[in-house]
Amino acid sequence: MDIRKISDQFFVAPQITEVDLADLHDKGIRSIICNRPDGEGADQPTFTELSHAAQKLGIEMRYIPVSGGMVQDENTEAFGSAEDALPKPLLAYCRTGTRSATLWSLAHAKDMPLADILIAAKKAGYDMKGVVRRIANGGKTPLDQADASYDVVIVGAGASGISVAASLKSRLPGLDIAVIDPADAHYYQPGWTMVGAGVFAAEDTVRTMGSLIPPNVHWLKSAVAAFEPEKDVVILDGCRVVKYKRLVVCPGLKLDWGRVEGLVETLGRNGVTSNYRYDMAPYTWELVSGMTSGRAVFTQPPMPIKCAGAPQKAIYLSADHWTRQNTIKDIDIQFHSAGGVLFGVKDYVPALQKYVDKYQIDLNFFQNLVAVDGPAKKAWFDVSRPDTPVERVEVEFDMIHVTPPQCAPDFIAVSPLADAAGWVDVDQATLRHRTFENIWSLGDVMNAPNAKTAAAARKQAPVVANNIVADINGRAPVSQYDGYGSCPLTVERGKIVLAEFGYGGILQPSFPRWLIDGTKPSRLAWLLKEKILPPVYWKAMLRSHEWMASPEKISAR
Figure 1: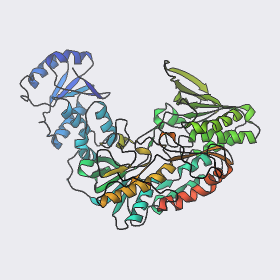
Figure 2 (figure 1 turned 45 degrees about the vertical axis):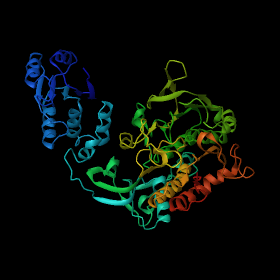
Figure 3 (figure 1 turned 90 degrees about the vertical axis):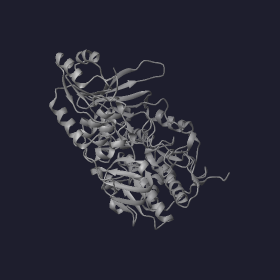
Figure 4 (figure 1 turned 180 degrees about the horizontal axis):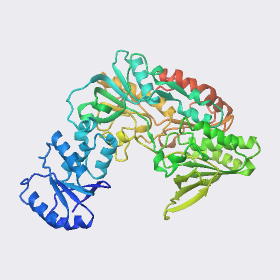
């Protein structure tokens, strides 16, 4: 018998038999819903036969038959009422379990987020994409028509979304474009490292979203619930339907704070901080500037994460401050990384290692943060060295800077756009979706093997814009992305190791080596980070001024 768990109190199974009932009873099932009409299969026991046998075991049964592929609104209502009334745990069955999983999904449309429903069903082996619009509509069958239609719809108004909207408008001013994003504010996230070091003020890293959306681009201030790429449709919260001719997907990624036990409850107090949140970065500086002795722990989770160098930036800038205050001799600095190397591109490791040695940073590789107890000032790491059993270690701290686990947003991970790992599946050169030819993706959420940085998005936006314009004109892709990413590693206040690299870790310096040697700490690179890049971001990148971002052309064959 194939029993599949949807929740702690609800299970689904294909057709059961009288023999299975005793096993279900032993497993604690107290009630059963039959969703398969009698007589659908020649070898199928009737509901009455099963019900009589179940009654002898003390299991209550209900009959809510649904013909295959014909789940009606009234079926959902009856299922929901039965689920509420019946004792738990509850099992529902049909021929394969799909109808039962569908009924459960629709019945919970009003009390669970759509993504949570899709995830639960998917984990049990059931794909609910065929009823996603009904789930978004509270479980009811919606009208099959679009509320709005555009030439290009862009999901996400972060660095990638606004940049590609501006780039498209500069190429085809008459293009009818809509950007979908529920946020009121837009953040310059690369600046938060500097906020955590007392260099930038937090308010200098934020603008209102409305001030940045390009002119004549529609801003749909809503969250995306789901995608129906076969129908060229995006479904918004409330089951509003937006139709597109071409779609760009770039909502960023999800910071999964909840994956570390106890972190959410203590973040922002008890010495627990993170530069990965706008409201937490000032607390980092408060802790660093006030610390004169004790243990400072810095963490890095498994890849991928946005700006893979950011966890180290926090360490170096903190250590530099303690060095200048002459307190570093009394501070135990520890870096706990889930990875096995200091930095993924070996050319930059020697310069970074010198600073590790200078600041006497204790490196702890293959260590992933799994729990934090803020009041007790303790953290726990799972140590997963190659060919070695996982070991859990406890570490005490006076302050801890946490880089949270990161993943694709739920509405992306459960969508038809995602690969097996949950990221938007694109061709890494053209950034076009591998399955749906009128969809592109850029930024943190797509699965190209590049560094997830704002600098990468700056290079990707013109590629996507050029290729969409080519597609509109009936041409093949004309531009390709080479994997460029940049990570200005702030090794001390006033010096930066400017890491610039593409696919495969190949170095891609933007400046002559005599001007900035990216493999060595540079004062000019610091000036670039502190004074030049913020205005370039606000006034150039987000306004289609593609300074040093011309995409590589695809060679004619």
